[in-house]
Length: 274
Image 1 (tube, rainbow, N blue to C red):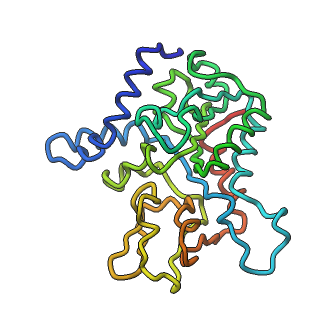
Image 2: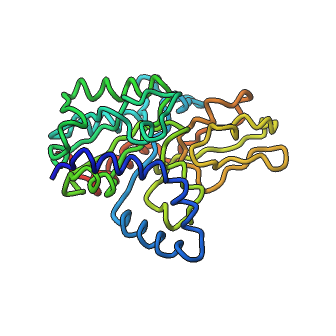
């Protein structure tokens, strides 16, 4: 059942407190209960960050770039497969944080039959062409897609069942609630992952300038402790650091040639958008 406006306002306020909630998971009194709650809410989730198309570089003799499978093809695949598409009027995270760097009106895209239950005041149905234009605009502005199943979205939107609702977020580094992963124990954020077969590597061209560690990474997964960048397990391989590095010292490595197909198969097991 569609959630009323007052409930949506309450959720928006709750998003503002996300930093406090994330840090509270480490406290001795309330931490165990919060960690258990987060594990319960995300136990069926599987969300994948997609690297930017322009950081998938060709470094060896391969077919022409136009024949290269790119992360955005995954979004296009599900948009075209979906029985229903819904564009939100606002991004919940940017609206709650009063973002000044990226458009607040560039909201999430929801796919699947469950999206038909979303409160009509929160957005609008979209054609395939409108949905593709929406996500293309997000990429042009430098936002990063996260795609998958989020049970929380199903709950706060009243869009059920959760296995018939796919979320496609267009995340900014300043407001995205996923940025709080750095403050929670690893077993709590098990449902957020980089694309299978994709990772970021630091090369010997790194000079330790620190550009990659200055508000670029969503999860603060990069540090420069001894004159060279070090990437932690919090990395979601979005590629923002690769794009910003002045020395081209960071590379996005694709270890699975079928990484696009692998990701599509994985997501199809979690969400049915048809």
